[in-house]
Image (cartoon, rainbow, N blue to C red):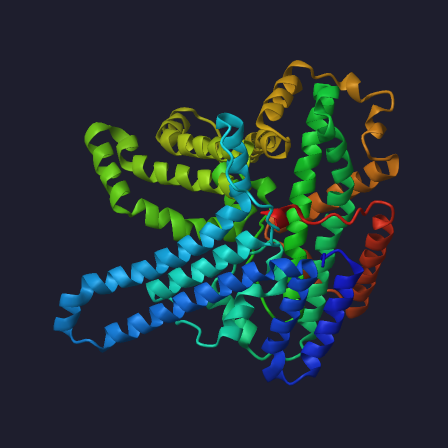
Length: 517
């Protein structure tokens, strides 16, 4: 069931009515039933994967709870003698559930890729059955593993009711493309009793409409341009290739942020506040800041469950000691953490999919971010010696353009069908670039009509204006909320009418890009 389908809108409207009519103590059970129905509509054959993750992580959490309870019952002397065995058992539970769930994720996303690569290079056949890819498999897997690790750390108490825990894993607004929720922040809201709050209905509806605007009017229209260019990139000159990649940047930006807005708006109408997952990355002044703003919940998950454990692990502590002995200056201090950062971004690249271009994408970002960390002391010295206004608007603009150019190059890698194609497109974008390639009606032969271009350009102007206002500390919804009810209603209805009229002829019903990850 797609967020952009009439079926989903009817499903959501019916759910909201029942949610606030039924006794409040039944609300969480209704959400669980609705989440299961939503997932079954997306593919009944794949619900077994979701059930497997829910069952194994629930069992792991309960087991950790039992071990922790037994530990607390011991006296000081017994704790001293049994500490090693106790830690070994707890770590064993975490490692086992991680191996099981990440093993399933590996098989679904990478087994066929590895089998094909092995066959191509060695001629060796290995069994590679065709497996159906569950919707949002990475998101609910990461979320569930995060819960287990939090139980291990004592941050949360294990949930005893399996049905209530299953709601946390399967909550339908986040299942398509996140955000990746934390149990201590999300579960209490899912299980709480919510009264009808018209402010939540109004605010959630406005946020969802903003998401539909980005998805339907901008992402769907630019998708036609992107698909046309990338279907046969060898037939186009550099200017068309640059335009196609720019279109992909717009498509991905609006597709992902629009989907997140729809998810968070849907949850808000149910009285649930989901974690922010997107914060205007076009204003980022460094690549690190860009990815901090792009997929906030994934970045924070990687930081808490991968980066810190990795940086504080025994091998990386040894690497830090080695660096302090053999290197000088800043490099000796940050070498180990820089390497941990590189590993994290490499994992994020692999997370995007089973393809060498994603490996290259992870390496591309990892190398640039690691290099920036290592060269930071040099940049500081340069700024101290050159009498320039490093905090002025001009330098901030240069930083944003520099970051945007780096991200733009990376989009060649992620969108091209093969890494070799991406490299060829990059080369021809420089060596065969001429604006004359876009003249003589060529601009309107790339999948978008004049009306499409007009809608996209106007929509981008509105999007940029709103995000500039938000970046300066303002809130578009807060601004609207300060107006009279009649004005709010008129603006909302006018926006809805513009959305429906603008979507006519430009909506293809495509799914969300991040749903495949």
